[in-house]
Structures are given as structure tokens and as C-alpha cells.
Image 1: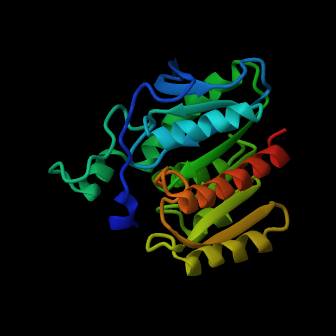
Image 2: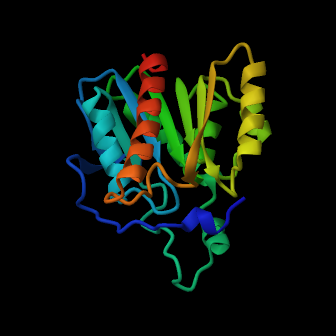
Length: 238
């Protein structure tokens, strides 16, 4: 499911933002940061606005500072969604299916592992959460975090095989709290898989990466989610 919230608060894309750099990783242009000597990595899968979003790269830099090698691939092949540009979101999604991104993620993960990485976590935002949950269904990764997910279903959650956290919003038409609560029930029932679910009050879909940097309250809420994500990866990506 997608809707207006999926596109709210679009970022101003900047290909030079961040302290990392862009390189080809598994066939995709990828923003990378972090020690090449780290044995632990985090893969970030963007929302519909892609890997040049400044807040996403800022988050990648924060994760790298915590000791992870971080990769943010351009799963959109230089074609992020542009609101009011004559192409509806539905049409854009037809060209950018999450199933395609999932297939593209496999060689990226292999390329990361070829660097000596022994454990990988994946975090997906909105559109990207569907890719992350697909990776979590098999042991491509060691842990997943789904942030204000789009398209993720109860059946997806039933199929995960690695520790999975879901961070949802109180005001989310795409993954409303009632659906997120269903995710929680499924994860709680899966005794063989660690799960964590949190619904953040007074925030909307997209709050973890599409916040206004000048809004102190919005920044605080986003940073709380970022910290929860980091704690999840610190616990299970090792």
C-alpha cells in the first residue's frame, strides 16, 4: 500500500552530502562510510527518494561512527521519485518494484562480504522496508529493522528468520498502529526469532528520515528511533 504520506516532506537531494563517498558495490552506485577493517556492516535501503537524501546519509554517517561499515545503495538507479513531475507514485512503483531491489541487494551483500565482513544488518525505510523484510526471510542478513514500512504484510513478518524490529508511527495510513500491532503479535508468537515493536507517539510516516532539521521535536523523535535501531544492530549484528 502507498499513498500521500509515502511522499510527504520530500528531501532536497544532494549527491555530495555526507562524509563518506560513492563507489560501485555489487553493480550499484553506493554511498559508503565506516572502517574497511570492520567485520560488521549495515545496509540501508532508502525510501522512494533514494540514496542522495541528506538525512539518510547523515544517519549512515552516525552508524559508521558507531563502528559499522555502512552501505547505502542506489536501488533506484538514479531515478528517485519526484512529486508533481507528471508521473504518479503508482506509475513510478511499477518501474521500481521492491522485488527487483531485493534481487539487486544479493550481489551488494556478496560484495560487502568480500571485504571480510562477517555479519550484516539491514534497515529499510518506507519502500525500502519491504526489501529489508525480504532479506530477513533467509539468512542473507543477521538482523533487520523496518522503519515506517510500506507494503510489508503479516505474511512477510511470519516468514522472517532473523531478529526483526519494527518502528512504527502513531499517524501512519500506510502501516497504521493496528497493523503494526499485528506484526508484534506474530513476532511474539515466533519463539525462535527475536522481535521488537515500538509505535512512536505524535509522529507520522517517514519521520525517521524526512524530518525538518530545524524542528527540535522532530529531530528528537528521529534520533530516538535511530538509537533504537543502533541498539538492535549492536545486539544482533556481531
